Image (tube, rainbow, N blue to C red; front, side, top):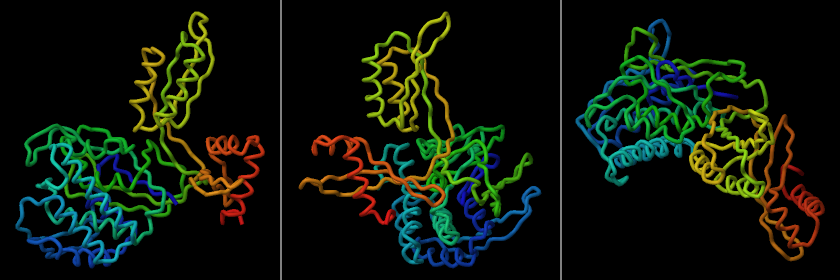
Length: 410
């Protein structure tokens, strides 16, 4: 199963996510009952009326949240809202995954404010996010995700529309997207784009929820067979487009997982083989997925070495700095590449050979119902040296033990 969250036209907010999940088939009665149980955990806030109804949003039939609250508060500590969310999650019996999701969402929201204003986590106060709306969006989404059993599914996000112009709130006026949005989406692997609309299309609560749903960003829809589509209406009205978030559920037409990586490339023509060998080791130690060096010919018949690095956003800048320092290159090409990968998991197992205990790491891949595994070479090399056996003999020995002890290979 694959889920595509599509905020590339109208952006995303907490209520748009919740409404699109209801439109996708989440039990709205269960969500409403859960949220009514939750209101007691936030003082001075009462849900007078709550419902999800179908409306026409600029030509698109979508689900909208109808909410009436009685609230007498203008600011709250972030930790107060977090406690209310976690108390609610326990009260209504959310699964452990849903509880962890809800906690991560509110933590991200608080941490963004903490980072921007230079305050300790415990001292952060919310203004716009102080309303019970924040609890409704996060807890409601957790209930909906639980009900649809989507926490274990592959969730992809299209590029996020953030709008343009300026936004004005409790701390004044600033360019859009506001600092909170940038902080929340920083290092999330999700991509954003602006547009001509002079308004905020993505809210901090929506962004905080989104980064804990989708781990992969893609520019195009994956190859999939569509099962159902959910449309969640936002509150704002725009002449240019329907203010609607779209979530698409379907079957992926292959057995691969989706991933997105950065590819760094640079050509060098005056670096020795010894430096190249040392460079590979240094780059891998910085967190690269892989490094390749290719021989070639460039302009005027000059011999060259093309260095190609696969990495993620977290290690991108450190690796670029290392490439410049170690090779003296004056330019690095950076591109983003979507890739299909065979599903895999890292396993650890304790094995005893010749009265020596070893912790062996191995990668298990699964494709079309068949499992295979590969032993981490560094572990293989270490054990081989200690046992004074060849790599080939050591690998055979370890594979037999893993196949005997791992339930996947009974």
